[in-house]
Image (tube, rainbow, N blue to C red):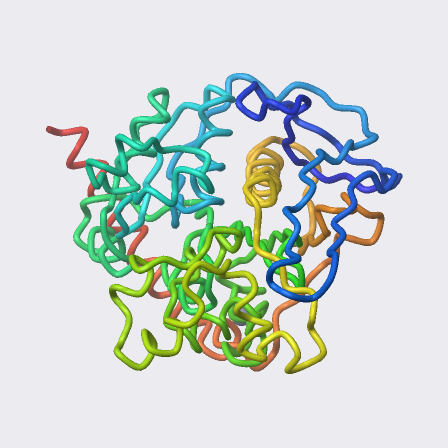
Length: 372
Ligand SMILES: [Zn+2]
C-alpha cells in the first residue's frame, strides 16, 4: 500500500470542501481520453476534462488545521489552487505569500481565484490570495524571493518553517531553496503533454531543489523552449488554447513580434510544432496545461503539508509524479537522496550558518513583539 497524504475534491465542483485521501496501490481505470485528430492547427481538439476517479478510501481533512510560519511562493495556477484548498479546509495560522505579478484578465480562466474585476483593477495576485483566505493571517510580499529574504534578515517576518513552492521554472525553485526553510514542498506541472503533476519534498540539508533540478538547461520543457523562442511568458504559453492576439505581442522585441505576427489568431499550443520545438527530441505531443492539472498539483502539496505537520511515524523524503490523464499509479512515489556534488552537500556549513542566523533574528523579533 502506498500511503500518500493528498487532498482531492470528491465532486466535479472543485469549490466544495476537499477531503483527505489516502491513495492505495490500486490504479484507477483509465477514464479520460485526450485524442488529437490530425496534426494541423485547425485540427486541435479541446482536452476532455473528465475527472479522474480515485478508487481509494478517504477521510475528512483533520480539524482544526493550523499552520505556523508557512509560506506560499507563487500565486499562479497552482498557487491560487493551494489558497483555494486552504480556505476550503478552514486553515488557520499565518501565511507569507510571495509574488510580484499583477492579476490580468487571462488569469480569470486558468486560475482558481480572481475575477474580471480583479483584473480590471490590476490587483496584485498576493492581495487576491490574502482576501481569499480570511481564516489565516496572510502577510503578502508583493515582490521577489529576495524581497522576502530581506524582510527575514531584517527581522520583519520569521523564516518560514515550510515553504510551498508553486513556481514554473527552475531558477525560481533555486530562489525558494535560498530561503532555507525547514522543508520545501514544491509542486509543478509539465511533461510532454502538460498533464503531469509532481511534488518534490526538499530539505536544506538535502535533497534540496538543486538536487532535483541540477541544471537549468538539461531539463528544459517544451514550454520553456517556446518561451525562449518567442518571448511569450510561461503563463501565456500555459493558456495554449487561446489564440495569439495583438496584445500578446505588445511587450515583445521587434524580432519576436515579427516572428509571431504570422501566427495571429492561432492557438499558442500549435506554436511549438510550427517552430519545430516539439520535434527536437521526438516530442510531438505538446499540449497546454489545464486548470484541473494545476489543482491536482496543489492537492499533492496540501496533502503533503498536512501529512508533514501531523503527528505520526516519520516518512522518507519523497518525489511524486503522475499523469493526471491516468491518475495516481503504484510506482509514482520515489524516495530521494541528496546529490553528493550539490551545493547543499558541499556548502552545508554555510547553509547551516544562514539558517542559524535567521532563526536568531526570528526569535529576537518574536521577543520584541511580545514586549511590545
Ligand atoms: Zn542539493
